[in-house]
Length: 355
Ligand code: NAD
Ligand code: IPM
Ligand code: MN
Image (cartoon, rainbow, N blue to C red; front, side, top):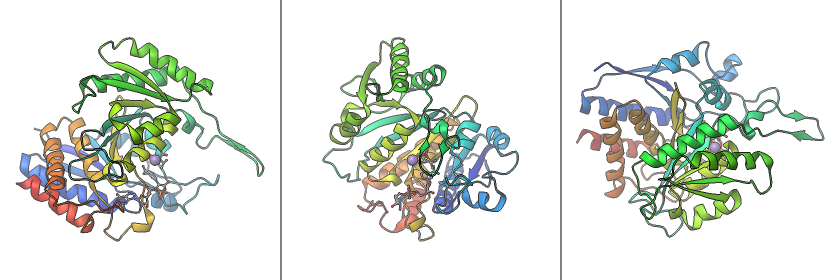
């Protein structure tokens, strides 16, 4: 088979450490499966912004579209600012809107061998947040109006934008591996349609699309009640779809129930481009110390391999992570960092990929 061409954005803070860990694991996958893998570096993020005034180099989007897979480390340095005062180099607008990756897919799963802060058992927390990724409140990014005394941002929900992400959620519910709730496949729509007209449109479009999927149960929760339910009855969730900003917040909440931000990878998926990254940020206070949990990046790598049709490689990585957690080779501490640091996790996963 042809070589797999992977583009890598190392990012800022803990990004490079996590990406290095993933490249070690990817090397082991290549050996184990006999695949040839070409890795190309694409600079991006806050450090690049500081140097060049732009978060990506010229032509980057085209190169990322042409790659078979894009693996991105977290970006962001809180002191690197744009003229409007927001952070420079965050790439949210550039990559998500630039590549039109409209579905931000964020699996939340309590794994065997990980202790969460609630009393739930593995198997009771296993759902996927599908976050709309190109509009909602974030379309206001850089477009808000501010005076020293008042500032406003606007949320935009469109029919087209909602329809495509809701359809993605129903297709995922139909096909995904993972425990269907009580034997049922379900998509939950999370919004605040009781208060805001934009969310009322989101829910109306959700209901229209749901009617095309009679085999998948359609469910609704207001976002405040959803935050509560995600903590106290996570087993009611299968696929959960929501607006961009709500998805940002509730996915970090979900991560908090399964061992921390370092346990959650994600995919930003569009029609002709996709990229994969941890859901968390660049964790500046632990950067360079080898303390970060790389599983978020490794799980993102597994999602990338799966998305690129390398199912065997994806399963190798997933199974290696699962067994290393189960047999205690990896322990996630209550701080969210792994015992033995990043290196111990990488070594445990590489060893199992090779086995
Ligand atoms: P953060 O996600 O970087 O960190 C939140 C907390 O979680 C910190 O205590 C951090 O140490 C910890 N943490 C995060 N990842 C971890 C890991 N893998 N292992 C162990 N602990 C981990 O959020 P923040 O501090 O609010 O933001 C830092 C920077 O990251 C900001 O510049 C922010 O804008 C940016 N950011 C980028 C992305 C992205 O690239 N997709 C996502 C979120 C935040
Ligand atoms: C995420 C991040 C981004 C977001 C930031 C860094 C722009 O928090 O990927 O969840 O808010 O979408
Ligand atoms: Mn976030």
